[in-house]
Length: 209
Image (cartoon, rainbow, N blue to C red; front, side, top):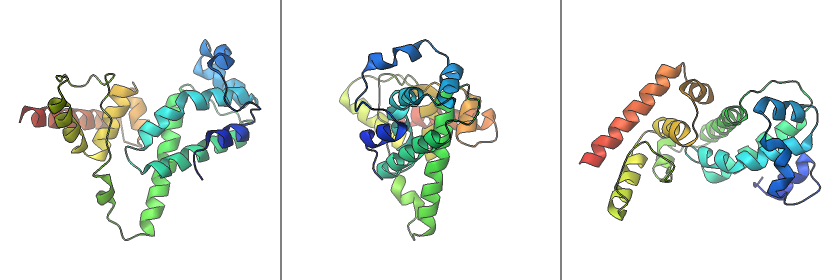
């Protein structure tokens, strides 16, 4: 399956093909708990709002550890799964953390299943995975010259997959150490701190060369 927005939106139950931002105005001042509770009671607009708010972030997160097409399929699977279970009373206090954790598990299972059927070395496919440098990422100060940006990009891509994931979740998406540990199925927040600190140390060392 491809991540076709019209397919996902129609599956959720919306009658309009491309909702306008003001269609979701009622949700902007609601807490995550309230939005999720409405969705759980069968409000398809609530699920549409969740989809449009988080789909780009989920894609950006997923492509750090899996091919883009696998991530697209996984996002569609995730939202179709949510649609089917919308009348269940699961309590969600942080929608973003719930979606990231769910997507992480779906993608990981797809990748693991693919590797079982393949003789490929899983490490070969990660060499070109990148975290796009953004002005919103404040974890290291660099000059804006092209040479420095390229050097930073190479340094980021030299990090381990888990280090890149942890840095992205913490500095770009703003999750806490505990939330990241939950999303990445790590033992505790100390494991997250180690990933982040070691990643930063590696970046600083590489940038100093």
